[in-house]
Length: 136
Image (cartoon, rainbow, N blue to C red):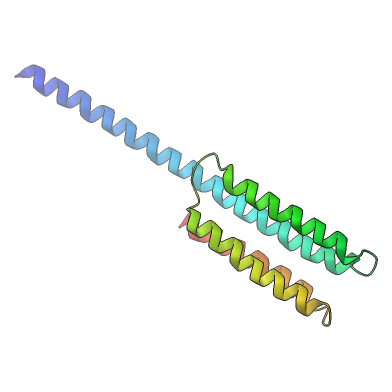
């Protein structure tokens, strides 16, 4: 009888330790996810502002190449998460929402240059909203 109580105590201690490790891993993954989402928001906003600043001197073909590279970077990031901290659906919806904001910014920015800083802020907001969603 005493052996059974001793085994239950050890089992509970092991389960508590496993729960603490899981919670610590979840917190670390959440920090990683928020940091990367905000980082991608900053990169995307900075790139839109760069387009605004130097577009009179650089052809649109080079910008197309840059954004194709950015899409490859997003795709690589999608595949290489060390921990599945960001749900795939959230990640894909964030990339799609940013793509819509980016596309509208580029389409309108040709005729109305004030669209570039507005689009940069809106694009960053998409990534910041995803970071908030993951971190809640």
